[in-house]
Amino acid sequence: MKSTPLGTLFIVLVCLLGLAAAHNLTAQVEHVPVAHPVYDFLIHAEARGVFSNFSSTALPLQRKEIIAALEVMRRHDTLLSGAEQSTLAGFEREFRLLPTARAVVFSTPSDSAQLFFSRLLTNDEKFLAFYTSTSITVTVTPLLSVDVRAASGNNRALLGTYGGRIFGTIDSALGFFLQGSSTGVFVGNTEGDSAFLKQDPQLFKNPTFRLYNPRFINFAESHVRFDHRWFYAGVGRETRLIGSGYMTRGIMSDNSISADAFMLGARFPENNPASETGFEYRFTHFSLLAEPLDLNGNINPRSAGAETVVPSKFMAYHRAAVRGAWGEAGIWESVVYSNRGLELAYMTPFSFLKGTSDNLRDRDNAALGVDATLRPLAGVQIKGTFMLDDVEFGRLGADTNGRYWWQNKIAWNLGVMLSSSGIPLDATLEYAMVTPYTYTHFSRQNAMTQDGILLAGNLPPNSDEIKAQVRYFWGGRYPLSLTAAYRRHGRNAYDAQRRLQTNVGGDVLYTIRRDSAFNPIDRTTVVFLEGDREDRFTLTLAGGLELIRHVNLQFLYRYAKVSTVQTLSVLPEHYIGFTLRFEDF
Image (cartoon, rainbow, N blue to C red):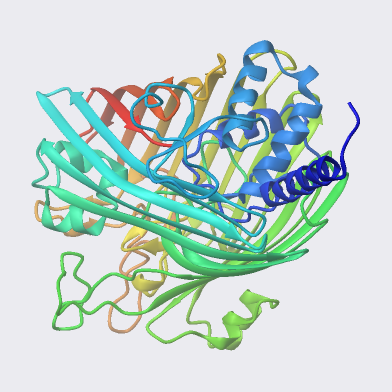
């Protein structure tokens, strides 16, 4: 058929709009939350050696980074099994690399297909509202879930969550994200430190839940990120995982509440997981929640309300890393400081924090370390992080009694993942160790904590843990995982009123105690794992099934056996939970 001038113009316009839409698609700069299952899949593929310039050491990633990684995976899909290709196709549809139908509650100029009621039970992408153009993409989604739990000791709980999130990108440069939710406890005990639901770390870290025993708990995260070529900047409160590891993140974990932070960074090349090499430098300055004070100026973790005094607390963090097909190597440093305003010396994006700390009269808690990801063979990946919290070189090694100087404080983790080509399985073995008094400081407020809860990893001082995990990527978006963990911890000893009696460096809140003449009260030499020994073995089976798009069922079973002399908390021997969710991931 002969084309008319109008028809030719129409074809050209369609092509231009397609190019613009593609550009808009790959330039979405907002972050994707760390809870998204795509991260499990990317790390699984990372071990295969699919990527060259890619890093999972600091999460979350931008949406465009994930899109670029999925594109690389598609180009190397011969390394994937049929089940893995099915999982990849699902993520490609979600991130709009493959065409998929969308349904919305509220119509926009770009999307008006109604969700209710014919599309409600389909596999269409479902939104409250969705709008995309050449200059902006905006997505609004609901969050709804019902959570049923049961555990040994006649413990039962029923929880419900509702909320929503809005995210998008403006002019391919400014990304935004806002999420708010409320969780209601309809069945289950929240009163007392040993209450069943207080054993859930995701609930316990919420100050409102921990202090007031409420029936409704609010959570919120948000960020704004600017991205232009090699430069980026961002500010916000979001869950972050920092550190090279699999089940252990040695620098920052989701153990405590999300921290507010401002970051600046540069990366080369701009965004290409397929390139042979890459470099990134990032400066982050965190605003942390210090422990509250009572009316006498003493730390009182139970203080709350309008009259509560909470000192200022911050942490500066720098990291530089190089990447290639062989893996990634990074060097980093951090410093925690408190009881004063923003320190300009630590706000300088490019500086040496430890030297700066010394020049500021050595008041603050500095640490430095290295991390690495290595792929020595196809399908074999090694990850590890080493932190030097403090060291006195003249007292390295054991003394004549086989004891070590307390101030030589380190933390490290090392793990290996096997992910053979064409097999939808990966297997991981990981070990982590934290020596006594690590993360602590003479000023308790300068400990590596957020609201009194450890933020640097999830192992307390004077402990170690070995974990083994097998994951099966059966074709859905949620793998089936089996995880075994054995943890040893040398705890401090307390009296019946929870007052510290014997300090062996097993609590991040207590360093060496001293009298008024600054003479040590506690022993200054230590033996790893001495103290009130707690051994904990856990076996966890977890997985999920997407019933229809945006409607999924999650389940978790955990067996726990805890051996201890002095009981401080109770972990149910058997635990099982089911969650029915309406959520975009």
